[in-house]
Amino acid sequence: MTPPDLSLSPAGQQRREQILQLAQGAACRRRRQRRVGGLSVVAAGTLALALVWSIYRVPPARIAVAPPPPTPAPEFAVVGPATLRPRLANVVITRIPTDPTLRRRLALRPQPPTWRRLSDDALLECLADAGEPAGLARIQGKPVLLYLARLHR
Picture 1: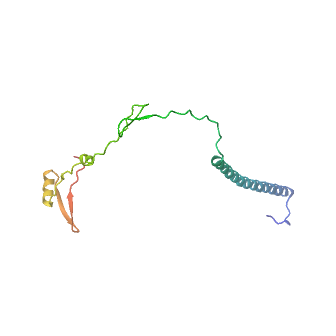
Picture 2: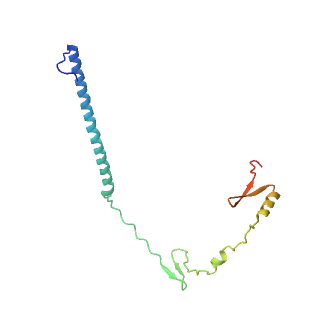
Picture 3: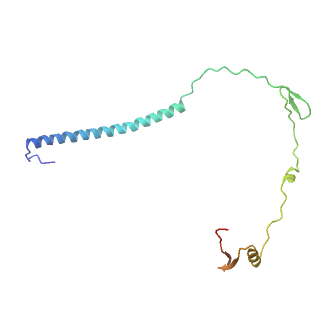
């Protein structure tokens, strides 16, 4: 800001007043925006709280509903020692004994292995017979199968 003892022309003085008014207006607008922004956050929070409260705390409207007419209970007649038959439907209820051999009869039988163990020489011979020549190398004591990978057959 300019020191007060510095003299300004009347146009400069008028410009200085305009700048002061513009600065005060901008400061007032910023103050109002901060206040409204804070109030809007508080209002949104209050609205959300009220909505949650109204959903969980307000009991549902009670509408008078006539009770359904009573349905007649089915009458059962005993047919056998463990069999009941309702008179209203064609349903037979009976007890079926569990077969203790069912699990054994339905289980899969153990299958003999379909693979065989080959020695290193037999593996190389089988690969050569199949048209896939290969070789064995021992790297750090472990056998590694080396072959030429063909991309297109």
